[in-house]
Image 1 (tube, one colour):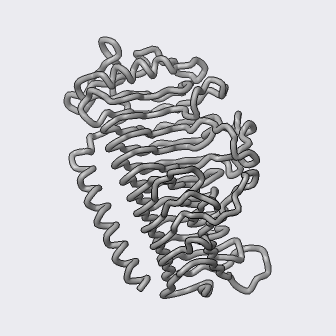
Image 2: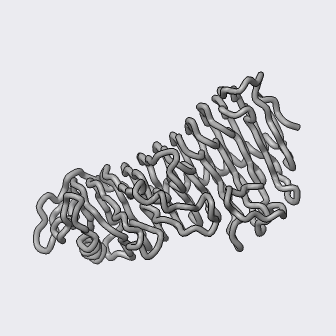
Length: 427
């Protein structure tokens, strides 16, 4: 029964993504040239190669390459001009190194959608955290139709300030700035961008609709604190694909209120794996539903495919989640549901989690585990996990302990099994 329901769910989710993708992408692929707008005219404007497009080059608004002088004001002036332009517009940040502080590219814009932000440069964040009024560095907000592209790099210079992060010991810590935040973006596209050494999260998407991110390269040391690669929350129809993420926390974390999220062809590691959650920490959290993670590889991560909820949480649910065609390479905790999630330093409640987990499907998960426990399903005693399906699981032990084979552990879960089952299923 669990297998039949999984097939029906998977088919439904695939159809939903195909329908939305065709709608979101129809007529939405303007050609993005490289190095356009070399010389701007008349107040910083120049002609682009797209017919009728106007280039707004930050150099013409006073930006100073070299990475020594703050160019925040010039970036803002160029954005305001591009956003207010009533024709096709492109904000151009040419090759070079630019130092900028906190900046918000605020919409809505007057230009026909989409407005293009071409980042060919390396952007370096200021390192004085007192200059940040809120925990974001570069924010795109309230825009319908946005493309951010160009092969450039956002360098958060987090290595200078990570020593001030005490979130692993203090649950009420002050968050450091996220490098790139997309807030209330509809029909967004992020492609071919690099993010290094974020002070906190690299990329965050909140209240986004029809957003696609691909061709990203995200890096930070494996011991860097809270440097999640991509965090998605309160968003609908988001696709992340063909990206490489190596960081000190979750490669991708999917938070409350996220629905119809697709993760495809992502390489993750080092880091903490791909996580649903954490969920249930705050009151009135929205449900998480319709998540697909497929065709991805995890290497040397602390967790693999993880669902995590806080004990004593307010009621919500996580349902309709598919993990398929995943390769594990020396991964600790390859498959884990943790409804007792409580990081060290947090003040944890003793009551069971009230996040209801159901219709979770693991299909064709293969590779190696660095921990003797390959599958660990720790569900809530008050609301046991329902309809958890494991089909064609093939994991081998790669750790240093002398153990004969991997094991599985299950508590408070109604699970079904099919196909290859290595390690042997728990009952």
